[in-house]
Length: 288
Image (cartoon, rainbow, N blue to C red; front, side):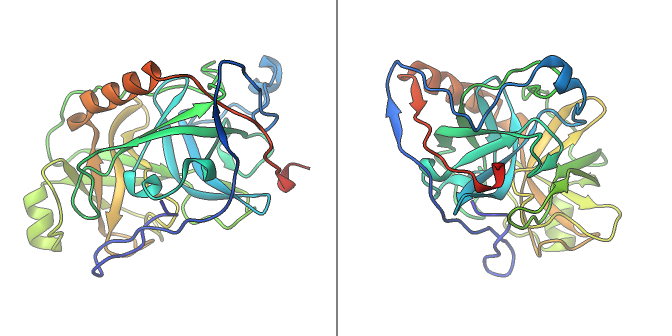
């Protein structure tokens, strides 16, 4: 993945990867990981997240969870994110953490990533920066701690849409951090290319300007949704920018409306495959 945004040609950034995990076994016998525990409804209500459709994608670094990028829940076993986050990362090193707005808190549950599929035409700064991940065990979509979000919205006009990015930003290993909501305004791609020299912008990208605040999207925000939070309408996924964390500058997002068919096909393809069960031998030092 890469945390978020490691820059290439001084115009893009994408992040780092590493670490360890376990093996994936294809079997019909289920083994329930202790790292993704089931909470009672009463306990769940005590810390209901504001953004139950947002998850973290990360890895296990010597027993501690390392956040890499942001994902959006599509269904009870699928997550949407940016392709550059996960393309080069082995499945056995990937985890998903969710169920609470506060990252690295004990209120979050952790899940194995057992399958991934990125767009076949994805290239760094070449567009199609989108991927689907499959998790185990499945999310309990109770509309309290976990909820899926609709990805089949109609195409929107190219400019003048007020939206928000929802992500954790730059997060150190073991650091507890709450989700933040950052305001954006979309602009026409032609204007973005002409006025801001976003020469790598593609037709299925969205250019949006960060509107206010001391800090823009940071490392760790890759794959974060650009959306109407009130209506839970998903517009895009954060792909790249000129420099991480820079305020009041434009950023490029993958336009979700152009990929709804590919997203559904990817989920159908993975569901049709043999069920993949993760055998739990993961050690989390930060869970004790």
